[in-house]
Image 1 (tube, helix red, strand yellow):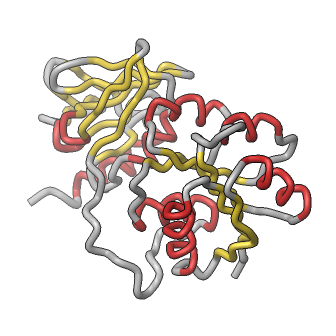
Image 2 (cartoon, rainbow, N blue to C red):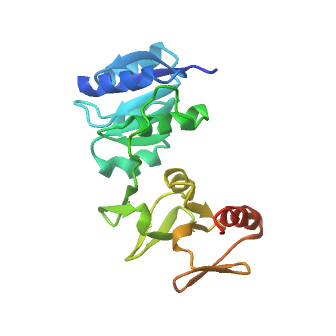
Length: 236
């Protein structure tokens, strides 16, 4: 089992204590240090090999994002903050994940799992935490909440995506892969390199076309077998 040397950086003691408690539940994590400001964190990063950094954004003197820009070879970084408006900037810095406070253990472990490659919760971890059923995206100088249940399908536009919902179309600078990781795999499936669809919104499948409202979306040859297996599991 690979052990990840972990550094927790947050200027608020309750926040660091929570992350320490969460890290103690994950066998793959070993906390190598705790820092309460960015300058102390920078010194620890220079002194110790760190694999995973939990980094608060809003800190005095030097923010987490400013620290991250200063690092030549940063470890895997999970940003932690109470402010969703920093999400886009964080992803532009190629962070592993972005956790909004208050942080639930399930969401914490999901972020860690991206690095350790395991989706199974460790024995004894709480499983009663309700799953988050929405996300926020930044578009046109505003933050928009998107409920999973309202999504019809998502269309890739290279560096951007267009999210088609029941009431609107939202264009945001996001990677399709990022949305695939956030959305529940039991309901959302890729049918084409351009389209990710909500199976609840599908009205019918006709040949290689999938009908959602007035839209007809193509199912690519490479995705057809996987999609049909996904659908057959729901046929009665």
